[in-house]
Image 1 (cartoon, rainbow, N blue to C red):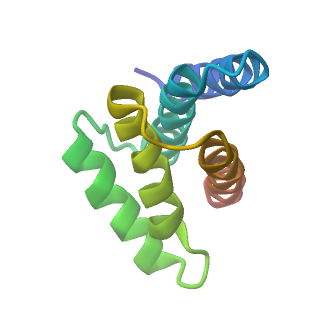
Image 2 (image 1 turned 30 degrees about the vertical axis):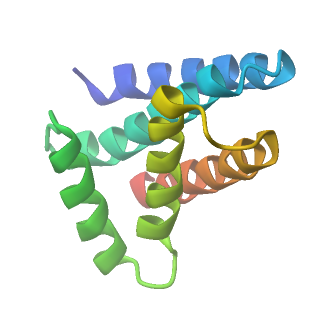
Image 3 (image 1 turned 30 degrees about the horizontal axis):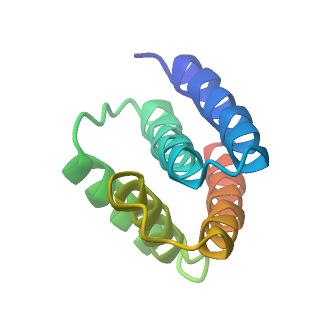
Length: 117
């Protein structure tokens, strides 16, 4: 998939997450937020000619980015996004936790946009 496709999905997932948050469907919002985080990582990888096809690939590339950009907290933000992914299956996070996670994902997306530019 081309980097532009990842960007389209990223924007779609963020919009859907907003909709799910407004509907207080926190499990679905969690998964959309995770999707947005994953697509944001993939856009940076695609800009470098790298295709990420697994969760492990996402983690390894995010770790690389975190080392390249110390102080940005990319890996910590990605951990929060991953907890939202788990929440989709377990639904154990409180609404407040999901909202905080949403802020973290949006921060991650913005930081990755800066790196990609």
